[in-house]
Length: 230
Image (cartoon, rainbow, N blue to C red; front, side, top):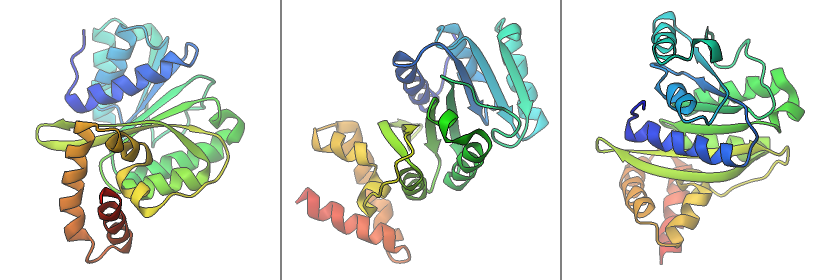
């Protein structure tokens, strides 16, 4: 069985949860690097096919080799492309975009919505793990019409990561600065006593104390968090 880092294991669990409520379909792993997530999903039968995309040839070749070595040549494809360019979405796809900046994620989803249309976007699930700019990603998702199904956190080699699973509903909404910076569903988990989320929030508090001097969104979020924590 393909082993994964703690960060990718968190992403895998979100894919598994998404597949629990969605019929059989593909995994599209954007920025797949070594292809480990795709291999694991195929090994466990979570997906019938896997598509890996990479903007550069070398990492695409690594993903392709991993899939072939694991015996999945016939049920996988690897593309050298920018995001989802040239990869039309299909019903029940799960699209993983992990390990890249939030602005890149926003750009990829914006182009996917334009290329595939709102009807198809409503038939797939996105699993997102931004490395930074979470507040920008969350505000974009809400304003663009996505709903949150789940959010999770982990600590991998002393670095915190978060992951969000979202679906497109086409209903624009707004979230507070606190929700954008901390995560609307993570706040609920914190309020329900989730210790992992509590550790993550303490980490964010320390970071935001520094960033609040130059970032009004972060300042408002931190003030709201302190008030709500009482």
